[in-house]
Image (cartoon, rainbow, N blue to C red):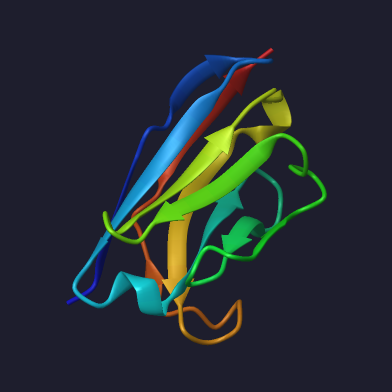
Length: 119
């Protein structure tokens, strides 16, 4: 049974930083592309960042480009999202997700972690 467990969310002031972590278990982590998907109040779900199974390729939503960095450590079965220069509009629930099919057809999801950015 695959499990994804996120951590690192919280309350931060605008301009601050947070690092999210997601530990993957139950299957071979290095076989899957991974990403961070956010759901903000009143907005559609958005994939903020993606990383290939090897970590050699990343992509970002325009809204976070230059401020967020996704990375992974396949030896630790963990994917990270370093968020800097946070803005109030970054507020939302951040889900770790992954799969071996193209986004959005990913099969595996975490429970989500709340990120709140105050102005």
